[in-house]
Image (cartoon, rainbow, N blue to C red; front, side, top):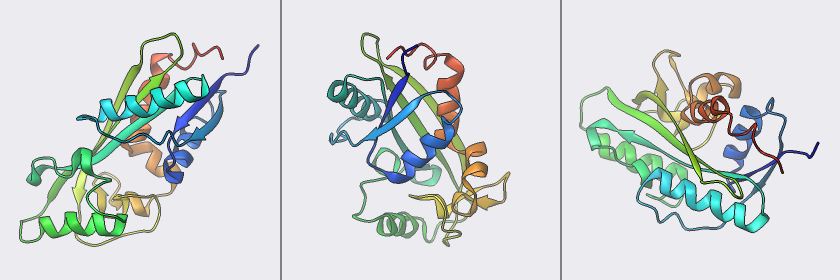
Length: 193
C-alpha cells in the first residue's frame, strides 16, 4: 500500500505544530512547505485555496492550506481576513486591535474562524470550516499558542488560548474544528499518493 502523504501549506511553525497534533492519528506522512503565495483573496476560502493549490502544484501531492482570523463583533468583523496583516509583528497587530477597542464597553465579543482548503491532484478542491466564539480581553494572558491567542478568552474554559496546553486548545479551536470536519468527511481516507 502506498504511503499517504499530505503537505501542510504554511511557513508558520505554530500552525505546522497544530496540524501535526490534530492529524497525528490519521495515518498520514505530513510534510510542510511555505507556498510563498500572496494572500490576495477576498475570503478565507480564496486565500486557503491559493496556498493549498500552490503547494499541490509545486510538489504534485495532496495539500491543505488554511486562512483564519479573529473577527470582533463591535468592529464589524475587524480585523478578519486582515488579521495577520495589520502590523509588522504579532505584538503590534494585537496592540492595533486593543487600541481600536479602547473606550468601548466590554465584553468585546469575537470569534476565531478558519477555512481549510484540501487540494488533491485530479479532484476539485474541498473546503472545511470551523469557528470558536469568545471575547477579546484587554490584557495578555499566557504565552502558549501564537497570533491573538493570549487575548482571546474562551468563556467555557475560563482561559485564553494563550493559557491552554495544545491538547486543551484542540478541544475548542477554530482550526481543530475545521480539521475535525475534514476528517469526518472522509476526504483524507481517499488519498492514494
